[in-house]
Image (cartoon, rainbow, N blue to C red; front, side, top):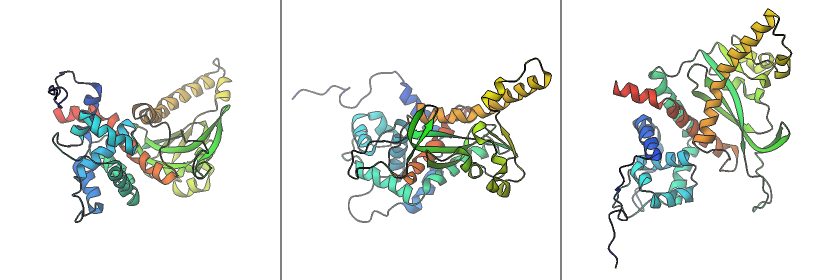
Length: 327
């Protein structure tokens, strides 16, 4: 038999610190592991029969690896076998003879979904960020983004997901769901997430995206008339809404009239504040690669989005947290 080299036996000989390792090291340092584990532990199975269960922290780390890199359950199982860096992040010893299979990974995800722990994970992360002074509550920016779903009917039921829907944006039709988020106007961190089918109007979720402590809310022109809706007046009567001017109307402003110049400057200021919500969508779709739903139904996809936005919040402020830790 050919003798194995150090490289093939699991030892890393290259001194290069890859971007993936740097990313995982940073996220490992800023994720509040003790708080998240304390949140999940009461719901974890006892494991008194059958094979000994994997450590709860290991399963949580594997679940977060799935969100970071967009792996399905089978793909995550294979990645654990193929990528030593993943095993290191998951605290799986190099000499371990058994790795979690896709069924074990799936059961942990179902544990989070069944006990509605994803929303609590987001709340726990936000509580930590608020304690550090990184999450203020004086203003909110609301917006929504489309997330595609498979439109094929080549499946056992012969139909598309009944909880998804199609909608037209511009001249293009989209099939899927909408993720509606409320973002802190100062820090750009997500504090509230709701989901609907793609054909639901953004304005229908406006009241649900406010935490109730803000005095100012910023939104694009799609939210025109939101302050006149009954649920908004009942739940948030003292909130002031700053809605963007319609693009066509803004183009007609006369740059030679002082009032129109002032209105245009105000629109610029509002646009800069609203831009913070787009950073979260960029992290979701570009950093974590979540451009298409993975599961059927809104409930499972909502659970995943809540965890993704919790991680997105941590990713956006990781530098400030790490700098504070070094100081």
